[in-house]
Image 1 (cartoon, rainbow, N blue to C red):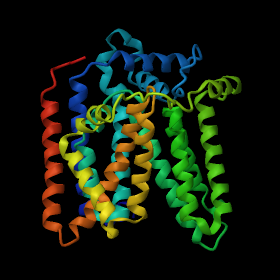
Image 2 (tube, one colour):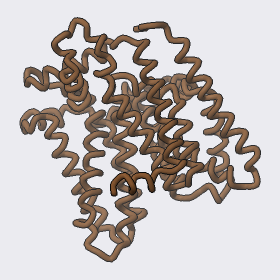
Image 3 (cartoon, helix red, strand yellow):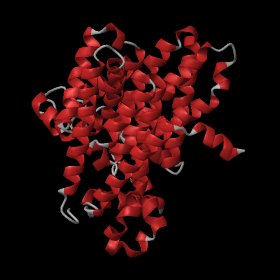
Image 4 (cartoon, one colour):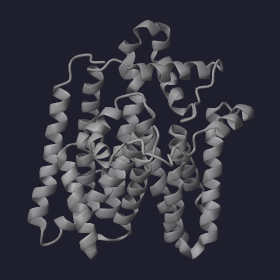
Length: 383
């Protein structure tokens, strides 16, 4: 019965998505094969192992022990802890949870894009994601960036999904308990990876109030419940030690925005250090879709505006960050990809389909070429 139901749900879109994600995984494995564990990765691993033994607190001003615990647990389960001198030989196992997180983010992006824009939108979004050098690189290392990106993406779209259920004539708060738990988990992952990513809660609440305006009291109750679940899960990361947890929350860098000069000294540096790493094609598609969104009414609707607003907020915050600027940019990138996929879908279904096909298809192919060429140029076991 289960296999029959599964076969009925798997069609061409699911197979194409699976193939793209397998290509993404293959690129991550290639990247891992050519890079030893870095000093930063080793630091996360050591902190996580010490935290599990309660010999030290893996929390810092920037993040909770979540990422160190993931790295430490992977190190322990793989047996690398008993052979710590040759830790880099276990790099595949240690980095595996972060590659899986990257795959889950890609799958989430495809699922949301397909629900919002149809199969074409899902293909475009996943094609941009799977051949993004930035996404491949950060999914292949022990780091909080990819974990925070998945948590933030899940938070925004779980919040929107919950808000859409508020039109049903039922007791919506209790009925949504599964989504509340899922939203709380997303909050814990997002904020646990980087404390300053709490700012993603603001658009999440705003979208819930906008979509679920018919029951704003229920919106606030669901949001507060999800925050409570997220807080409890973060407390679990601190081994349910109230004193340690309270001290960590007091010392956390909740807002790293500088009132003076931005961390990125100019918009050109911001543009070059991040967006051009993904290839000039992505920048071209972003410019085309932004212009289209402004001048064409059909492209302006909640499904494209929500990811654009979220991405814009994250990019704006990154411009004023002390040290988390790159993290905010990476977290915002899947939202930008979703926005580009939505506007591109409208273009591909319009009278401009021929030109749109050339641009969108050309960008994905160019990104794939840049990405694969960059991977092939890696020196064996680079540091």
